[in-house]
Each structure stands twice: as C-alpha cells, then as structure tokens.
Length: 371
Image (tube, rainbow, N blue to C red; front, side):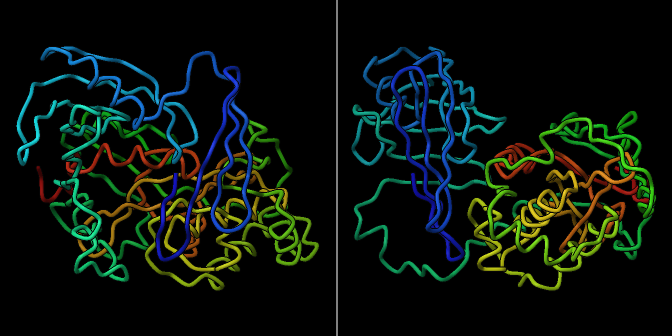
C-alpha cells in the first residue's frame, strides 16, 4: 500500500503465516513494525471484491467480512450488499454497496472484481481509465480542495471564537447521535450540545497517574520512544520538573517551530519532527509524542472547530495534568482550548478516518438562530 502526498509518502506492507500478521509501515525512510495475532485469513478490500464478483451473486445478497486497512492498521468490519447488474461504458458490471466505519460507497465491479466506477462520499466519483488518460492535464502540485465540502455549516454567528469560554449549539442531522459526551467539558442534552472551556491546569499540583498506562507509551504514528523525539523533548523541557510547565514549553515550541500547510497523508510524529510542517494533524501528533517523551501522558482527539463562519475538521491533543485531561491545541497555542472545539473521536491518526461518517450528516445552529 502506498499513499503519496507533497508532504510525505506513507507505505505499508505485510506478510502472514496464518497465525499472525507482520506489517511494516511508516512515512519517510524509517519504518515501524506491527505484529497482530489473527484467527482468520487476512482480507483486503482489493482481494474481497474479486471473490464476490466470481460468485455472481443475486441482487439482495449480503456479505459481512473483516478487512485489514493499511491506513488504520487494524481489521475493520465491512458489509457488502449486491444491488444488481449494469452496463458501464460497454462493460457488464456488478453493482454493490459497501459500508465501512459508517461510510457508504457504491461500486461497479467487472467480472474479475476490478472497480470500473466508484461513487464515494462528498459526491466523489472514481472511474477506471487508461494510465495516459488519467494523467492527462493533471497538476500534481494543485491540492484537492475538500475543506469547504467537509465543513459543518452553522446557522448563526460566534463572535471571538478563540476567546469563547462557553457555547451551546443546537444539533441536527443523522450523525447527531455520534457526538460523544465528554464531561465536564462537553455534554449532549436533548439535541443541545453544551461545551465549557475547562479550567487551566495549575503548576505544582501533586501528580496522579493516568487512568490508562498506554498514554505514556509509543503507539502507531506516535513514536514517543524515537531517539530524535526523546532528544528534542529533553531539550525543550530543559530539566523542568513540573508537568504543567513542561507541557506549556512543548506546546509553545510546536506552535512556533511548525510551518502550517495543508497535508493529505497519515502523519507520523517522527517524520513531522524531521520536516516541521503540516496541518492540525501534524501539530497534534507531534505535540502528543513530545509530551509522552517528556513524561506527560497524552492522547490525540479530533472533531471540528469554528472558524470563518463554519465548523471545520480539526485535530488537537489532551494532556493528563493535575489528575485530569486538559485539552491542548498547538495550532492556536491554547491550553485549554476554546469552547468552539467539538470533540468527535478519541485516538491517533488511525481513528480519524471515522470522522468522514459525519460529513454532510451534521448541522449546527446557535440558540439565537434556531434550527
């Protein structure tokens, strides 16, 4: 598997002996290894489709499988429903609907299981073309503009969003139930989302261990044990013993050292430290890795933030300080973050693909504007 963007190239490859899967993955020259025990043969979407097409199933046939995703580095359930047969550009095809992580796509497969056409989220259409035709007139330096297409519209206005300490939003749309309660900062109540900016952490408070020890350990894409990350974290904190002050120093260093630019790859903290550029994902993954390397438990979260009249996809971090999770955003240099940050998922970059399930299915309004 290979995902290429102007910022980095992410690759993943694997082998299996029937009992475990060994995956090598990463961005840049350095690669990491993930070992997964397995109890059934590994499937990829590209190997599953030929099997379904070869069976020549009748309309209405439903399949449920687990497929390994190179982007999330884990097996995900996928449901395939056969809808019928169609002729596309002279090719007889099998039309199926696939649903995975709340995302639905319609795919037209030829007799060998190759996709002739695919209609995915945001109205994106993929079509099989000869190599020369596909590349003709392609500007590889021009970014694909999806920002406006993936925004969550807001009816109403929020003044001074970066200084907003409390916010109530009226929530509608099919994805509204997917907004998690995250007390005391965020809670849903009868279609209303209430967010309160949590108190700032106080230095010199007795330390308490986090509820889960994994938040001080390296994890896929958050390589907090990498020698370069460990060395940089030590230089930033410069012997500071207090976790809150260490966190403040790391937050400030990431914000001032990173160059903001759009990115469309799976961010790796190790690679981000090398290039020091990227969007909110790169800021958050680097902040999280540096914090862990400095002994501050940390995790990534993602959701949406208000800016320029709407809510846009955004990622930030949470740090365990003073016995509680405190939000921290290296893009805006906030700790805690303002109340226009709406948390939707928790976890590293491999979890953020699930946000696509809310695109076009979630709508916000201020109480003054109504629904």
